[in-house]
Image (tube, rainbow, N blue to C red; front, side):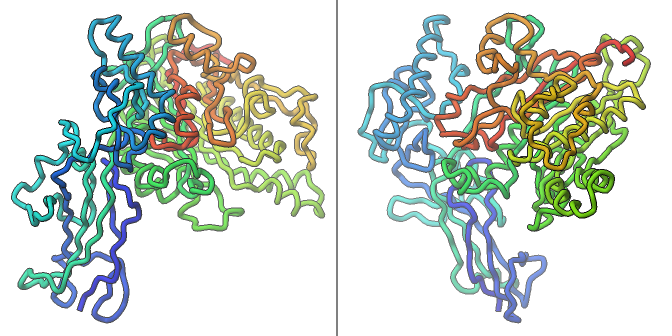
Length: 603
């Protein structure tokens, strides 16, 4: 007979909007073991598996800590209640939790007070991304019987008639009948029960007792406040995304660049400060997708996209939102793991805004082979390749715009756009390799520019801080021979130094914050910029490192920057120690720029 050996949930903490997929291990009648499903339409020896999900509701309502949503609240901030803040932000699991959160917590009160003073009413939307809450007044009388309208989640069950049991103050509501289940807002604060039973196909009666597993309490998905678009053309109001989520001007387009942190690198060893549930891929993928889709960018350049995640998740999910997908996986001469988990660069574009013209793939390993064949003596080739072969790649895509290009001198002419997406080698001691990879990419782009007069964007994680040789080459077109990075060149691949130049008029998009315009929005962003480099203070923020590694470069003779996605401030991220966090699911932040094509002047 068919029997269930084990039922297991990969994550103990269920989160609203994140699908739960139990692991069910079966023994077939022939004694073989499998994890395959056995539906009623394809029974084995007259038996199939039946699944049910229940929400367990207790007569005592449970409040959830606003800072540690997997913990039950034991105290409430009365200042939040008085200020009419969302009640969910007022709960804390311990006095220490409240004390630790106070620095960020009190900002909610200050904003609420200023909103009342200025406008005479509360503006709930100004309460930012603090999922802690705050006032100096505590209500410590919470006993688990807190009565609040926000805590009556699940009072209207999906299957009102499916109350299967009521005992000891608990009621079980059936909420699902498939193997997977996605928690809803009604489930917040409640325990879920998954039940798997072997059922006779004729009688529909279970064969033996069902296997069941309980989750911990469902927690809400953290929701950071949306990052705004800030115009850089001197307008002193914040940029707004229109009703369908698109920039209003038809002659502009937006480009997003984002290292999403590959799952194979998102380990508890590397990011011990991030809760395990927030590091899990089922949670992170939904949170990343929600963030990426929310930006509604016309072109999306992602780095560290695993091959299996591209095929199984990002390509199909973003297809639903109107994006066509292109992908270049890293090569695997160095990587020794599962080839399906190798990451790479993925570029998506909106089908209603662009069409695909051409795709170029850059494999730096192949360039390394060519370089060593041409320059390195035979007896040194092996050690040279060991240094140069790092599996990094770049994906270059040529697109044709489908929208009208205001400001273009010949509106009847095809408007092409070249977008490069890359992830440069990470090792900090291989400064020569980083610079060589960037130089190789730029030489390839120069060839494209020579064959077609085309605006260019160079996006990605360059693993190079502002002022480093790779950044200097990109931004200045050359590297000073006395640059300290050039001291590292054991293979002499950077010689002669006079070759470290390119002719593309590249400018970093985010330098516009430092160079242009006036207004409150720009002043706030300037404080998040490094005045010595005109780059953001950081795009990568972990416990051990903070700095800028990611850039969007554009050809300034053919494109202008209209607006930029606002930067994040370090203080707001440090409340969760660093990135990734429950709110932001990568150790990098997304960069987004809105561009307009200029009238063409032949290079």
